[in-house]
Length: 231
Image (spheres, helix red, strand yellow):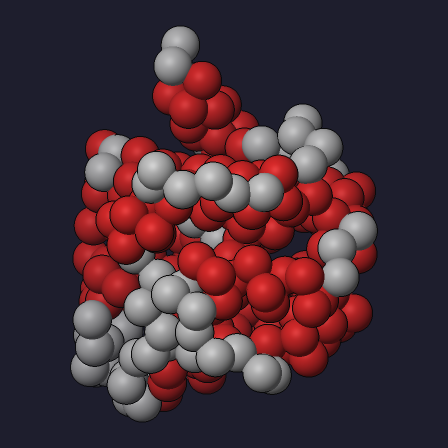
């Protein structure tokens, strides 16, 4: 799941450090993919140690992120949705070499869910950013470094400040920005052949997919909310 979908599932929580912690694995992957940030390593680092209230909140948020991703990525919905979109992409652009089409479908699904949530309730996004504004960038950097095995993150403060101030998720309302984000992610993982993304037909493809997903996403998110609550 992407930033806002993670927040939606726990938006009733008032603890800002928890919310920031739940976003941190994704933030770190954008900041520096070389930093290892795995659930087992983080849990081992905290196990049997006395930690502060701030550290506890942040740690619980990070663990929540991994818990949500585990449920989401193992769900029938995720596997069926990405399989179907991957196939549809290849059929819609038969002349294109769509590298790692399953990965492209995975990213598009997560971006689409966030976009639908923003269209449904833009205040949800403002509440998300308010949690970051409630924390100091240096505090977030210190807590992140602590869980990342004391990784040296001297420029992470500026990165968090920019993330908070730019509020780039607001631009998800623009299809052009969604395509830009997708290209940036593909480049980051070493995929540089994506000419099909510039085709006018790709925008038609995205709009048709969103219309279809829009009839189902509220039920889908409700299902994951229930799964996380153990109901």
